[in-house]
Image (tube, rainbow over all chains, first blue to last red; front, side):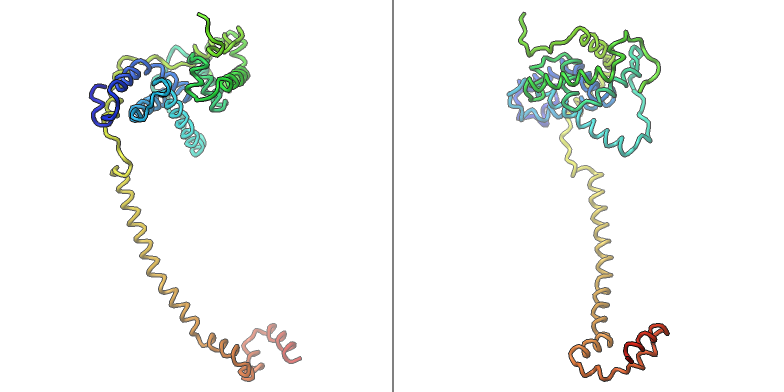
Length: 190
Length: 137
């Protein structure tokens, strides 16, 4: 990242630029995981979303006023990017009407059950955007409620309300997972 | 360390267990070192490349030129047909029938020239019968 700065960020504070580089290195894994969970378990899409978010964040550094932490600001961009992707994919799926099969995951994980992952992704897809964001950020990524509220720029009470509804909905959608000791599935349900 | 109430949501043991399963099963595979290097290189390349405006892209420029040519052709075709239609409207106004219509309108005596029987000759039989009843009566 050392040679990055010359062309675009001559107006960026060098210290801020160094912090951004550190952010990329320290948060890449988490950003990828968050994007993967938000876009429904699509590894290639998650990589695109994450890279786009990093590029947008870098280009937006001159406008970063330091009112929030750099990480908070970056995750805000990442969430927006993931939402844009979901919306675009929704439009694409609507026009394709399921005629084109989803391409296989280029990086399949043999240790996890793809059928169950699809079910969880489908259940997350039934939540509202706000519910999904808070559920993934707090319950899956382990952010504190206050941090989540800062990322989403929403009151803590609103975040808690979304969390409560999202958890109830997810437990309802995945009732078998909630009650039974799960054994890996081979087929896809629902 | 005492955490403030807003730090973590309060969950039942069942909720904790359920969420633990989700976290375990709904996660991407870890990033391989090779993939990490590739992503780093890609990101470095994208950031180092000056922002490309859509108007400067060759594909966009070609599309713009194509659109301009298409519009010019469409406009040319319209131009070639427009005067013809205008001429036909002017010709319609100057037709003898239109002139007769105007003469009848402004000169009521011209109706005296109308030969009712002569007009009936050109009509189909059923129309002529109806016209005969009303005009003759």
